[in-house]
Length: 280
Ligand code: ADP
Ligand code: MG
View 1 (cartoon, rainbow, N blue to C red):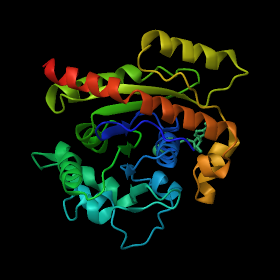
View 2: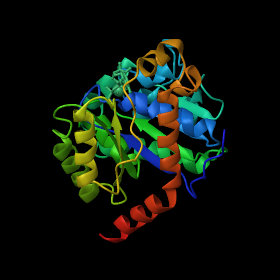
View 3: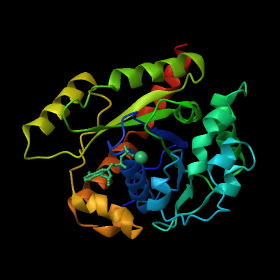
View 4: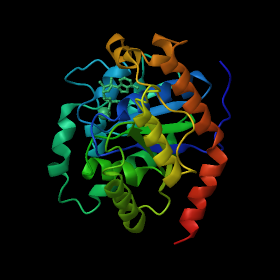
């Protein structure tokens, strides 16, 4: 492994797209693994009640497992909820469970209900003995309160775009939500990254989706695309990331290359964030 360039400060990235099945969780997990494998300290926060990222990173479900639910509702801090992943020693996880689906209603009357993750994460990062290079938040497929909490806690959104018909449908709505968050709650938020997933080299459609995203978002979309691969979808059932499950395969190579691109953009992205902040 090479050591990727380290970001000068912690990068806080929410992986979001209100469409389900576009590769959010797969991307969160495998980018985290690729970054960790190449020298970064990484924390994944699972904000999806489905808990797929937690399973992929080796969290065993027990009834007394501390989760994002407890963190959001203020019962414990992230420091108490986080645990090591099984995929890489420098990759930690705050797991989620189905309880998290009740949060929306349970905190509905709190005045600061959008900022619950923000508060918990700021406190954790300020107190943590370990310096994290990346915090990656895996979002559920909605634009509800959990996603709002994620967007208020980070400075970057990474949008996975599946190479398929109607890939860009819904993107406007997502970008509009991000603008509302920028205006009302989080002035440092930017869309730093788009990543084309399930790319099929044999189809013209995949190429067209890439070209269209590239045309509209030339600075944001990664050059690397993630191929459609059965190995990528199998890895989680073995409690592994694609990086360890099939290290020489196209899936591992593409997620590692995407992770390197993300690492190499750190300075530019952090500049964009501070420009965004001062533009208000
Ligand atoms: P989301 O989190 O956006 O709902 P997932 O990451 O769970 O999406 O992916 C949806 C499904 O597609 C899962 O079964 C996953 O294993 C599969 N998948 C994701 N990325 C790929 C890929 N590059 N190639 C093949 N299957 C993939
Ligand atoms: Mg998911």
